Image 1 (cartoon, rainbow over the protein chains, first blue to last red):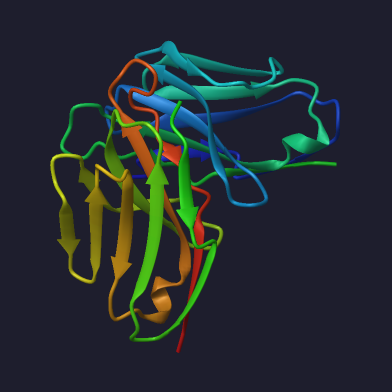
Image 2: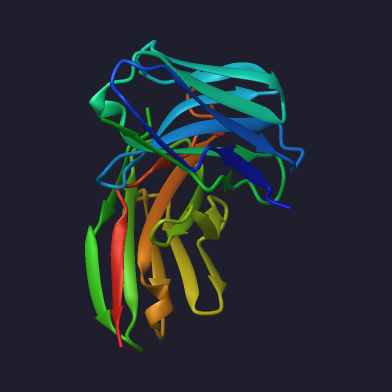
Length: 114
Length: 115
């Protein structure tokens, strides 16, 4: 059983298209995140949801819209894709207050915009 | 907000030698400092973490030290092996309203262990 699963694993699309990435966790965690990892490997937080409520919204273009239908799912929709959106997008979850405060990451979605 | 600086960006060591990666952070309210290992094409995975009420923590060949006064923390890997080759990330998080639960990552260190 994969703890945090993302789909798709690879996504190649043309500029201007709209695409979605899905994330699901079966750990019972309350908090989920989206991180973007650029070509230089830098991991930058984009959004965080706690129990379906948006709690972190970093400076991200409004073409990116997260949606959390329940606390086990956090999806990311991207409108009007641009070349600079090419990156690996990681979903993660955590349970605040537990001895292990760390994140569990999904396997990532490699997005290539052509 | 929090800012985490990590050095060096690349590190090459001979198998069996030790490797040290250092990070500094800016927000004195940060109190949780995990380290992640990311192998090529894989997800980052937690390898060790430390909280601000502890100065040092060890797990087999890996140890982490924290100096809260100086706001820096370090990862030490002893008796390195080729399978330690990966990108290592430090991170910091706190519990105040600005960064609750939000991990801010360093820029990463690419460690190469030569056999």
